[in-house]
Length: 337
Image 1 (cartoon, rainbow, N blue to C red):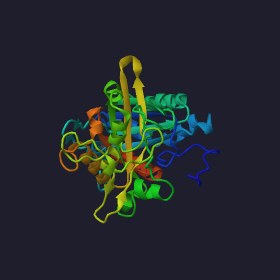
Image 2 (image 1 turned 120 degrees about the vertical axis):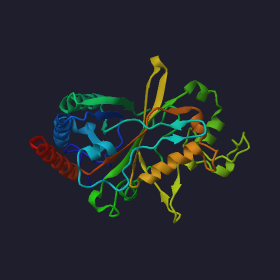
Image 3 (image 1 turned 60 degrees about the vertical axis):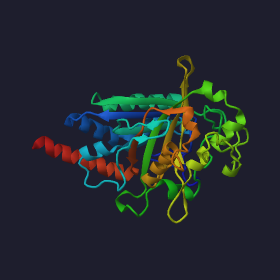
Image 4 (image 1 turned 90 degrees about the vertical axis):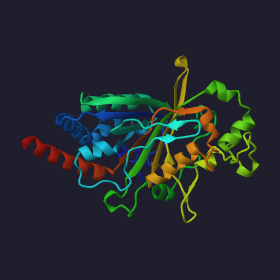
């Protein structure tokens, strides 16, 4: 954002509006039930902003940032007095051709930078500070691919909100006064069958996605002719477009990243969506997997398989600091009891 003077200072922790980056690490961990593990995690979260400064100050132009999201189970184990209104675990979705799994995750660390070595260094020190009481359940290193394309060859994130629309779409407002400025975060790791995808003619790929491949122009659903099963079909773009009861379009902020290991034939997209309302992402995924109308699912799922699905809440930096201090006090009290 233009008002942020990030060329002179490191980016604050929990800056959801930090610039899209060339490299990222998506780190999901679970936390052991012992009080010592919880206390160690609290200490690490308390020092998150200092860690960003320690690593990020080496090259401010690399714009290192980190957002931490807290899952519902860990939120309750910290004995916080209040909880974000919509925070709940990711619910498995039984789709027509694919199921969206629900997978474990107490903490999400979304680490971004223009330099992958800074992401690496930050993650290394972070895991040391979290200690042996956490278990890494998912770790993905993403990269910006050409002109912000995914590995399917299409530009990703075109519909992201900008300017004043960004906080209105991605950040909780006065509807939940205790958590204003925070954001619901949903992550999914998708693996693509690139061999099958590349056998599909480009015009059909474009109709499935809902945009032209080279110049990223929207395609009207009325012009789509992929009704090969006699069912009405919407593109991925249209199924992922959510409208509320008043007819207003509800956006989310995506910071998806490609990842892969060609030697292992692993090619994927890490989906990460920030939203003011969790129900928006939930409805988007329901439409993709179950179809709209029911049965007319997102044809992209014929080529992309989800392997994870987890929901978190990312509070603002001041709120996170308050929550951590409260948790530390309660853990100290429990130790003395």
